[in-house]
Image 1 (cartoon, one colour):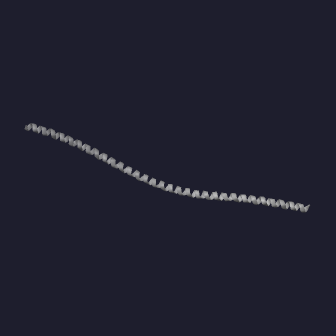
Image 2 (image 1 turned 90 degrees about the vertical axis):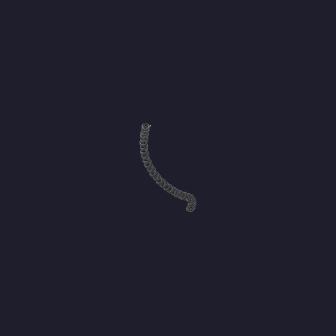
Image 3 (image 1 turned 45 degrees about the horizontal axis):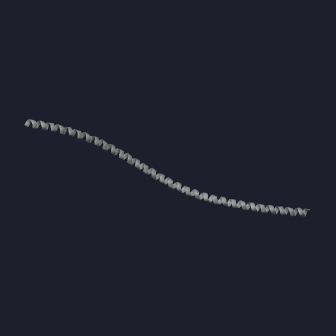
Length: 116
């Protein structure tokens, strides 16, 4: 009886041991897969960080360019205003000279008549 019980217990233990080894093998495979995925994700993360850095740099460049263009726009607006002012002054002067020309023409006509 005790010998049979011992043999049966040994057989059960052997079977249980085999099952545990099999289970450990599966766990090991699962673990390797997870490590591979983790490595791939780390690599992708690095790539995304690089891309982000490049985009941030580009964004900075564009903001700088935008600032320069804004300044240029402001300068041109000032120039345009100054030219408009000068144009107004010249038009006024042109009107005055036209009036003077007209007045002199009348005087010239009057003098010709008086000499006529």
